[in-house]
Length: 278
Image (cartoon, rainbow, N blue to C red; front, side, top):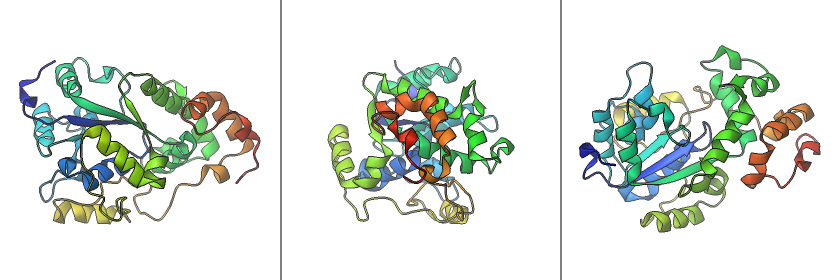
């Protein structure tokens, strides 16, 4: 598949994720530790000008134009692309089929995943800023419908479908955090790139939305592109072990237990019987 506008654009690194699964940690790790991924932006441009957010092609307000997307890709030798799309990228068809097919034709694709129970706690806090439905107990949030599925089932559907796609590499958020050096060595070998191993290995933490606004105005290479769960930076997502009731554990296991086992987060359903906090 060819697109004349992508000629000369370097091989893309495409990160496919469910929301709140370490997308921006991975983006910023690549930008920080691999020179080929380190794209600049203009002063005043939003932080997402440092990579291509493919989903903005479908934004309801001011959607990203394909020519702008191509320009962003040219800012790095190995440009980074992020999307929350499902395999097949059906949501981009027919309007952007040729562009997306050509984009993926020369790409390394990574499915970045995180324990779905942690995803739910982060997603619950994140949605509260703009979705009135999320201003409820976690138990109710878990059971709300998301495109015809419960929220845990939607997470499981996403990660399992991507896991089944040949050629897509799996990357665990937990590995990036617990052993970033090993993760960088592995990524460097797969991508044919030499890591910088800049200390600290992981990107710095974003403290507040105000800090992000300052970086937008005053920095061409801000250290992080993080989207906070809570824009104020004051509240943190609850830990699932404390937040989940026994009923929540049983519900999550019914809806998404297969994915927990497939990704190595559990080996059976025994976790549902552990005491809270255990």
